[in-house]
Image (cartoon, rainbow, N blue to C red; front, top):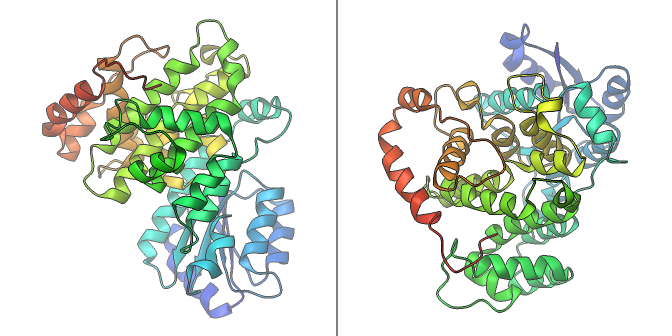
Length: 385
């Protein structure tokens, strides 16, 4: 059965959470601890899918606990509850969590996050997955430039100068970012000549996402040596999916999340190619193996859970989002449309689930989204790869 560990040094808080989750006792096991040390001892003996902890505890606080879980149980989903005020006081722990919540938080939002975490874990808990990750020699570390950008962008005192300085430490990523900023995908008003210009035109959050995509392709560059696999086409397809998905929302924060999920939706294909694997030789379930591999990798890296779920379930949106249009469905539609307008991709084209769109009441928007995809996918002189 699925297993959840909850840690808080106040018994009254634990009791309140226990009452909130009582109705789900047949769906998952819940275990409650007053100290991080007791929780870790339990997890050593009982494999745990999700751990949720308060930040302000003693003697081991939430940041220390999440760091220990990350090091000793990297596949466990990490959730953080915090009542602390101020970005700087919560930042160290928030960077170690897949998702953070401010107390008091909506019990329904909390339950949805836990259920999403369980879905993410279940989609990637296979022996084949562990063997594949093991073949890399070690668990892939979080991309360095992306991690540094995340830290500095959560500092309210940081600006364009600090962001540009981090990116410029890596010449290859700097060049790729400038190339992307000048591509037809973004249509900036004038030519971008520097990392600082790219950050100014595109915005720091979008730049951080593009940097993560560039680092992924750099990290798994061995994929380029596989016969019949084009790393350049893979990156171009990811960029197209990302931009189509971003155009499906008028809310900046939501659109940015859709963009990141689109960029990374097929990262598992790159990992498989880098390992010399063919998907048809390792896939044994209805969920494409590359989707599970990608979700598993991003879970290890601490990428936000909605993005992880979109990567893992973008071929099966009805299962992940049966009653609402969200990030998984957006990436599913964007992926299908990208294949429609650009048929020379390495990956086989998968049909769009139009019945799912009909149930959600958004099928009428498909012509609008298709026109957007055709516009973005139109060949131009710029290199969008």
